[in-house]
Image (cartoon, rainbow, N blue to C red; front, side, top):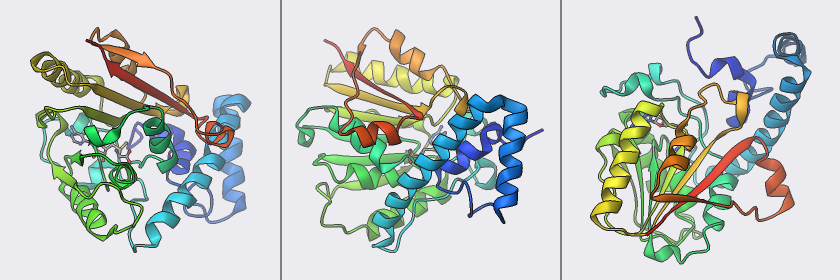
Length: 277
Ligand SMILES: C[S@@+](CC[C@H](N)C(=O)[O-])C[C@H]1O[C@@H](n2cnc3c(N)ncnc32)[C@H](O)[C@@H]1O
């Protein structure tokens, strides 16, 4: 049995962290073997999509690495949850750490057309804090990450401390070590971000918390969700479908800032939902 449900799309997963070729492979022959194996097992079309993801992923990862390296930090590198000490009943339903491309986060936030200084931002399953650093470039009142692995939370906290970029427009940034289901939804306008962090059972509990907060006080909410498109995502869930069924939310269009961004993010499913009423 494979150690992770993400491994069937090995190349895709590695591409998301910019490690498709040289990082994990000793030489071009190995690349070729993986490529040939993929064509045999999954066909040309799927292999083409994996390669497109790999190339785009590497491009975006390089730019994320550059931004962070200037401050001696890194949120790069996928981590399987079995390598971590996690004390949560939801451990088996969580998905590995794979960071979001910064461009993706900026594209979703840029689509909101809001004065973000009224909003707080929460990343559910924030890992090493990549998304928190990118969100801090926007003028949020507060940026918070919720991560259930103490090891990843420590890395995120250290990354936040060291990321002293003058491009930061929010100074109030923190990582909280907790299970996403126990994190209280902030009682103020909020942008809630999910990079496909966990399976449906856990997501349903978080969505119930969002609904309860909305019913207590209907502050404006945005829910941003991203995952790899179609069969590129081995941990593909129905979480987007639950958001579409939620009667207190309606879907909004994602606006790409450029054709280049649309191309680079072409392997992702990006969704924005906004609260109604
Ligand atoms: C796909 S990664 C996303 C990382 C980060 N949000 C990003 O986009 O760069 C999913 C993260 O969710 C975390 N996670 C999974 N289940 C969780 C839960 N129930 N509570 C808190 N964190 C969880 C994992 O440890 C992992 O770091």
